[in-house]
Length: 438
Image (cartoon, rainbow, N blue to C red):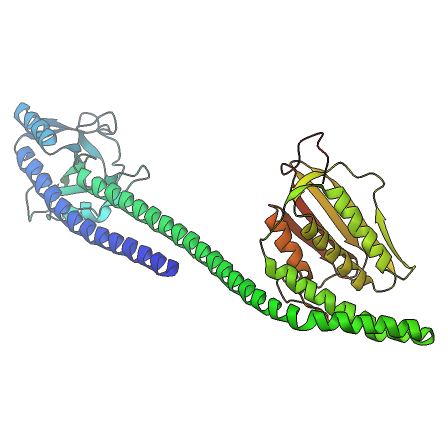
């Protein structure tokens, strides 16, 4: 649609300029006819009312009778001419109605530019120049006629130059065309912007609808999974714990092959449950520092390798907040679990909390292998995972939780240098000073 409007705009502008060129050519011809006629009229009025004064050989002058002067003054005023001149065949000006611009005896300024039209007039044929646009935006045009009359070779020609008033219709038409073209272009640009914004809104609405449908489908699926799987898992785990008590020598294998896999399946179910709940929150007054500390402590208990270290700042800033503590705890733990899994058995995870303007900033960094650039834009999408055993919901749960609390999440990763996830949560969503947190 936007492309079609752009093509339409160019087409409309092209048509405007095409008709402008056609009308300009037509007006040029009409102005040429008028100027030739006026030049011939000037020639007729001068034919019997002039004499040449050669007293100054370097600056000969054309002497006019009083009637001839009055006639030229009347013609110039009536036809809105810029000037009337008489030019000799060598290019000398013998008479000028505008002595402030060209004085008798001087060379005609437009001799070279209008040479062809002047030669035609010297040969006995009235002629006019092409329409010329000046550097100031106005137009210039001149007409020439032989002083001896039509069809006769002449040594002198009568020259009339059109004034801006004479060519005013041409300038008005050009100004109108430019204004129309600009308005049309502005209208098309505005239409394109509105269409692009509408398209963007439709895309977002479509994504929101698809997301809602996905959540609804997952909600139905999760209810079935929870009912059909979690109860049997509980029974299997309980049985495995009893076996571990009866056979302590084989406890390691029971832990590794039964209880550990049951726990992994249970975590997967928990992720699906968290994601399918979507925007359902139970917000209350709490503290982000306390939630963050709980998540770090829980991960530290689960990490068995002594080569993996989780570092935290010794003193976090107070971070009173109103939010869903369970969802926030799950989000923070999901990030930490991702880091632990990327580091495997050794590495370093750094966790920080501070104030950044009107927001709290929570930073999770690790020195793991990092995320390839092609995957960085997809890590927060549901079901996207680079691990065959993952559900692909860990970071999507994080993004959903942060959005539900009015915040934003950023990811920066350099392959081979680690990954940093930064969460911004609004500091305005906090409990009143002095209140105890539940």
